[in-house]
Image 1 (cartoon, helix red, strand yellow):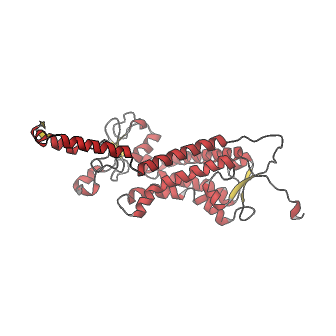
Image 2 (cartoon, rainbow, N blue to C red):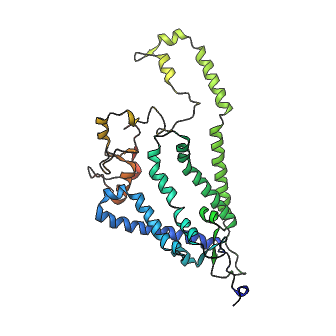
Image 3 (cartoon, rainbow, N blue to C red):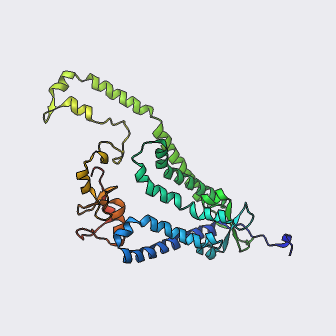
Amino acid sequence: MSSSHLPAFPRAQQAPIIRSNQRDIYYVASLREQAENVLRSWLGTRWLTRWDKEVELSAKLVYYGLTTGRAIQTLGEEYTNIWQHSDIQHGTPSLTTRTALVLFPTLPTYLLARLGPRLSESSSRFTKFLHKLPVILEVLTEINLAAFYFRGTYHDIVRRLLGVRNISSIPDDPNTRPPSYSLLGILLTIRLVYRLTKAVQGLIPSVSGDHVQSEKSIGKQAVPAAQEADTTIDGVSLSIILSSVQDDSAPTIPAEEDERTALDFASVPNELRSGRNCTLCLEERTGTCSTECGHLFCWTCIVGWGRGKAECPLCRQTLNLQRLIPIYNL
């Protein structure tokens, strides 16, 4: 049979692509949950809490490696009768492309999650860029998703970059109009515009804020210096109290970034740092948080523990993950 008589498969519509992606997410989560149950019974909850990100990464690599990596359909694609098609190779994606499809959506997120705390001590430009990279990736993902809802071709940004789209093995029905997801694209676009506007407002100081600050400075100058010096509260001069009060017009600093709140770990003596070890991972606490019963753990450690057993690992009281309190100076 000549190539001119080969059937042309239609482009997959938006609804099957979305359902396929939802199915794949469900199967990956199911595979991860089953792996966690086995590892928890073999190695214990403490080990699983420490290596939970590696378990999640392994589940994704195994699932997509055994399907996309072998040039066969994922379970979601098989459910919706769609296939991956490379516009560059004009057919099944090559081995290099399939490897990129497996690694690129998973490895960057894992590396940022693992290397982020270690790079927080550095103040180089590259480190600052890495801290902003998750937000950049999130925005790019939303832009790609909005474009997908309008055009309906590439649901994943990695597939867009590699030129891999989905085709359907089911012919289009000319009498049926496919559902439109343009409204979701409009809502995502509005959200992106709002986030961009807030980001620009954070970079450009408002004129009203400067005006209020100037009025406050004039008001402070009108107060006689002698009156401030004579007035004391609990033995502390009023001028000292007023000078320590933060200006209301200044932007609010998150507690985890405030130098007066965050603990400088390097300045803590070694004999005291040993008392900062988490009882779950047995290492120095990172992202310290407190349970309702008052015990301190790493945030990731206690969250991982609470998912498997809703009780404090020390006193066995009921553990509510929604009531964890972040501690920035312990």
